[in-house]
Length: 513
Image (cartoon, rainbow, N blue to C red; front, side):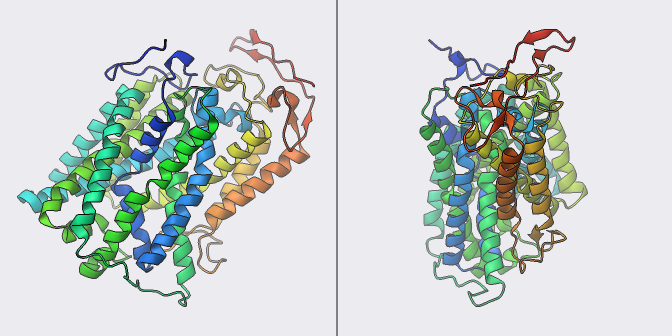
């Protein structure tokens, strides 16, 4: 019988393989964590962007559905690596980028988590202070914001230190609570909401398609942002769990975020009519606008959404941050790494809020991270297909144990095929980024103002990676007993796994069949 951990028992696992006895999570738990991490104010803000871009309500809804479905389809396969290998996705990427190349996934996860943790604390803290100001007259002062940020960030840090079980418990509550509060918003804004809101640009306007595609890509970026650390949670699911159920949980967790996206879209259309100053594209303030149009009885629900939703986003982000930091710097335990990164993130939040105006910079930062993460996800998915879903869980741990050799050593620990495909596609995608007023790449205007960076990065990564696998086949040993799918292989020898003092730990004779 498997051992059930207590909520108050601090998790000690880093990125080492989770023992089968402790892998008691279910696909529904993955759903709760992934949905709970996105069922927040931060997602509502993203949902408001179609209105900020000038689209009508129905056009904005079409762009939202398109972005959600495509993003969920891209994300879903990334849920399979955790149950297969019992570790996070960055470690699993060793199979395709090499023992050393897996640090790409670690740092993508690290940077993504810090960015979204900061956004969750800022948006939730602002909503709490704004709601308290409207309710009891609390001054919207620097000290008030400072206390709100510090308390909220500290609560998130405590949950993350306790680990997966405690985080899962918080998200079980948050998913239900936040969803009910969003539904309650239907009654709060039913009298003001008009689905016939026409927007400021029409289909004949030259800005229409750039705005429509840009809005869809912003929505798509939300599911993609989970790609690097989806395995942090799915690694607790038993390996024998049907893969279709695991993928369905990841897919549906993102489709379910239509709730906060719709809330943001609908309320933004109300704000655009009743409080236009809050949807100024030059200085949008969705949270302020929401509080301005909310009836007095809805202030408390708004504050509760900020609290429970922000806890979900903050914990899912910071947990992955500590996990990956401890994998790159193994002298840190998961708990030590979580505390260290948490304290740095909190300091960053205060600097960004009070010493500089970094809100727009963080938005740009998060977009650029996602632009680089999407090609990495494509390489992982195609690698999974060509390997027929077969991985050597022990060989994946070579970097963490400070060893050398194994099936995934390739060239001095780097698989130049995957690394080349990722570097080239990510660099090209960044050149085509078009975020007006924030960041426009050198080639960003070539598509008539449309931001094509994400689809370009995805397609180039797919074509280039497969081409490199065809032209320069990998060793037969990395493909397992059934051999490769779609591509060829070579009989190149695989070096044995050796310890730091060069003592042989495990023979890795190539599989030739």
